[in-house]
Every structure is written in structure tokens, then in C-alpha cells.
Image (cartoon, rainbow, N blue to C red; front, top):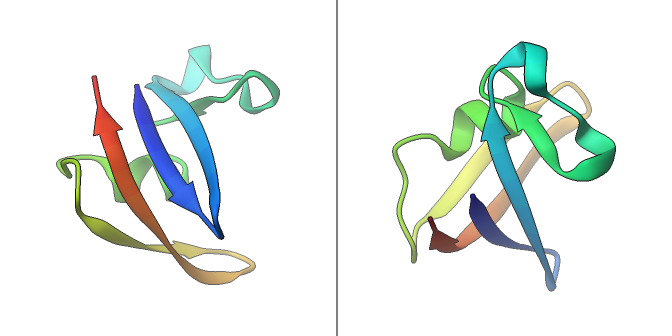
Length: 64
């Protein structure tokens, strides 16, 4: 599980395999742009996410 700050909003995601992903329930694939970007980061890191709709940044608040 990863808690991030995105545009002033705190959101928590569980990074799972592609077959287990369910974005509507905040279970994102490790192969998605956000999931891939968050791998190997820790609390306090600011991460750039390159998504099809454009790039954005999230700050990692907590990793479980």
C-alpha cells in the first residue's frame, strides 16, 4: 500500500499484479503508469508519473 498526496488530496493505493487490478477500488497494476512510477520509492519522495494524458507529480507519504 502506498499513500500519496496528489494536488492536495491524500489517496491510498494498493499496487497489485495486472490480473488483480481494480482501479475503482484503488488497486492499481504494477504495470500502470502510476504503479510503475511508485515502485522502489519511499516516504518523502516526490515522483514524476508519465501518463498518456500528460505528466504529473505525486508525493509519497507512506509505504506499507
